[in-house]
Image 1 (cartoon, helix red, strand yellow):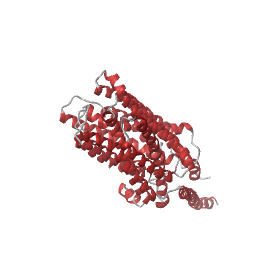
Image 2 (spheres, helix red, strand yellow):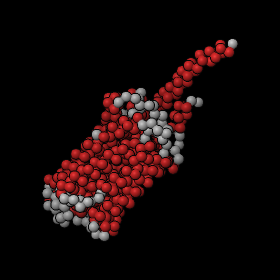
Image 3 (cartoon, rainbow, N blue to C red):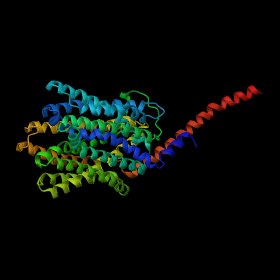
Image 4 (cartoon, rainbow, N blue to C red):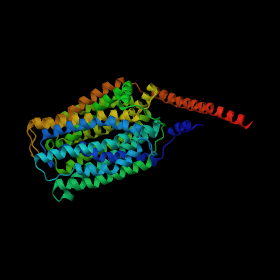
Length: 483
């Protein structure tokens, strides 16, 4: 059997539990910073660092859009990386330490004036965004080359989002009490000390991920420029649809995630202990969602599931708008179900669909562009984060939010409630409509995988024949010289 055939057989093999956990640990390390960005960064800038909401809105929009445009560049760099570790794994090793240090610097609060604080926020957020891109694009892309086995891939993704949820749970349940404890009442100092611990943990998680995983799917050498890659991938119609779905699908998580601490603090008038519980509850429910995703996709087509779950989430988000914030039983019931179902569709299912799109592109275009494919999805994810985060800060500014003021005006409270419920509702319904046009359902996907495997075997046979034809004249020439 040829090397290529052996490689494709290995690509469908069953993975060890160590590798699945190792892969998940990479997202746990990534999520330590990501959860701080999505859950606490708006609040940190307004209530700890001391920036005005309108400044934060502009900061998010500018830096996150600039950062989003670096994703395709990093994807192209990954596709052209040649090392003994593969195309994507080495970046986990190279960027692990800068990643941890960048997280610490971003959540530090030096003694600066108003202008100095703005400059510092822009510089450190941009730096951390670039580091995040340099480690997260390779991490997300490596999912497409660990295995071609559909069940093993979904198992990897379930571990990924379970450990992602565990890391987020640790952050959401510990960051406020830990910063109070370490800062001895100085929240700013405490946040820095807490991020030293979390940043070190994130570095170790990425190093473990690098050690545990392997790249198995044969990836031909990528020639040409970034412009040629982009020109090629836009002919992948399902990739174009997928990045649009990704853009819309991130809004519920980012808008609701960013405003949850404001909702609990000002709408519910909750204590710090309850706020910590409320934030942690949402994350714990996300973890449950990551666990139930695999048995659901084993039984049902994931594209159909994605659509049904989005419709249900849209209805539940509408109900969330009408529930009394002081009626804890119905509020918590809706909050629990929404967070479980949200992670099912936006976690393992969404990311498995991204890998399917990559394989469809190879099948259709005869060219595998894993790095640029995942970079496109992450570009739209970050663009969605930029607009969603800026929208939350802009709503706070527009409605007259005053940081650390126990009583907010009615317009601010309504703005927080709408951001918590109705904006996610609209996005869920739009996602449900868009996925109707996604054609990579399981039967078609199985056909694509069979044809890719057959194509690889044919290429291996042709390569062997070409080598034999090249060697035969040399053998004959040696025989003639011997005679």
